[in-house]
Length: 168
Image (cartoon, rainbow, N blue to C red):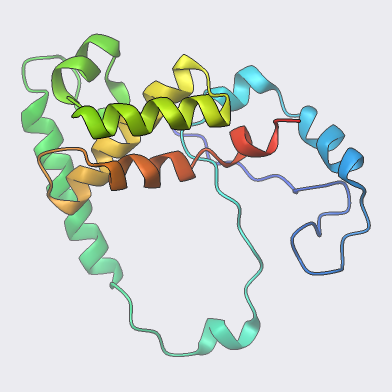
């Protein structure tokens, strides 16, 4: 088991999404993305689009959660997961197989309907669907919520960025 953190440019020139700096055609961008292995990308849990940040925003004071507060939420969520899986031989949501997802991630009708529509509209694989549920369970744990909600699923689906951009 390992954690992979990777980065890639959004297009051949690297400026797609940065105003008018990108000169790539839609075809060039799509061709560039197809160089990323679909089966490999399907196994990456979280895929984010990162924009460049204006230098003035980097130094401006902000009202946000401190690193210590984030750390405390993560520690609490990890403890919840450790207790949840104490008899299952695993210790994090990411390690859940389909049987454990069924056991620990029950979805109400609204959640099931939302997930079905999301999978259909984004053309997601079964593997990607299970990853969304695992991530939604983690988001719920970070919020201290015992149940997965549509909002948790929506946030988790938002982390499947490349699934949305790879479709023709």
